[in-house]
Length: 309
Ligand SMILES: Nc1ncnc2c1ncn2[C@@H]1O[C@H](COP(=O)(O)OP(=O)(O)OP(=O)(O)O)[C@@H](O)[C@H]1O
Ligand SMILES: [Mg+2]
Image 1: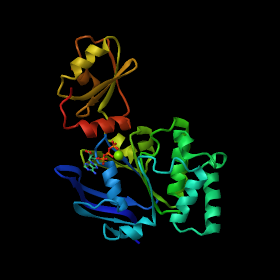
Image 2: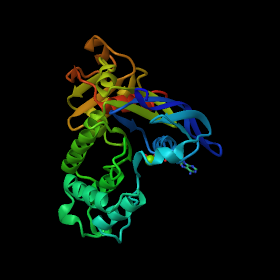
Image 3: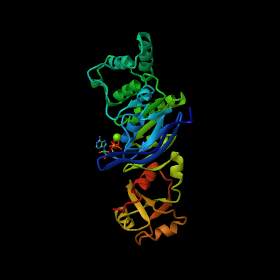
Image 4: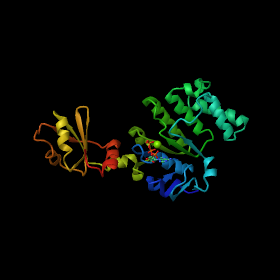
């Protein structure tokens, strides 16, 4: 077995004229949590489905756990777990019945089934809910059940497509602690998300836009690469300041956050005095360099080619 759990080269998927995923190269190391971040329709789900062997690429090659795709999709399927973007368990079965049903599909015998389900109900804090119908569970409880179901057969590779979309911050934190437990035990996880805090937790992150993989790397490195390009402005009349800044060729975006304006520049400035020249005449504004966040990276990556509006 090689070091990489997933390798893709030139992976492409077209739907008619639409290129949903365009020429994507990817390498994901064993045991890592690898994130996909990208606007709606950027190709995250399509890419995941190709890497699971559920969707045939229009071009390019992919290998997951040393299975060549799409040819070896069938044997791969037994070794992976896939938590889909939409809840895909049975609403009218109880929590335990859903797990039982899936365990039979995975071919676990009676005693394996009982043991594994008891472990999972415990691990995902679902014991008190074991006889509740899935349809009557809260969003966060359903996500926990879906993750338990995806890990039933102890897969080496786990695909999670926006797993926490209906989950409150505390439950999201707990959910991510579980993901790190799985990662430490050797599972490779590929997680798509719209949440910056989740993306920041990943070992590695890829940002997709319009089907293209625009950037990838360690989240801290991606943020570090924007050094000198984020400036906080405080003072009066921030709406007018913003309007003025957005006409400047130097500015990629300006977004108000409470009593501050967060400005992302196209190029780094070493001297804040240079930046101040782009502001309206009023020099009472307080400007200071700020640390880039992942949201800045996201904006930079997905808006770099667009004209400010
Ligand atoms: N089966 C399909 N037939 C036609 N077009 C499709 C199909 N599946 C996806 N698409 C299109 O491909 C593009 C990428 O879709 P995809 O679902 O991969 O995006 P996504 O990044 O997962 O979006 P979201 O964040 O909203 O889940 C979209 O324009 C979508 O409409
Ligand atoms: Mg999606």
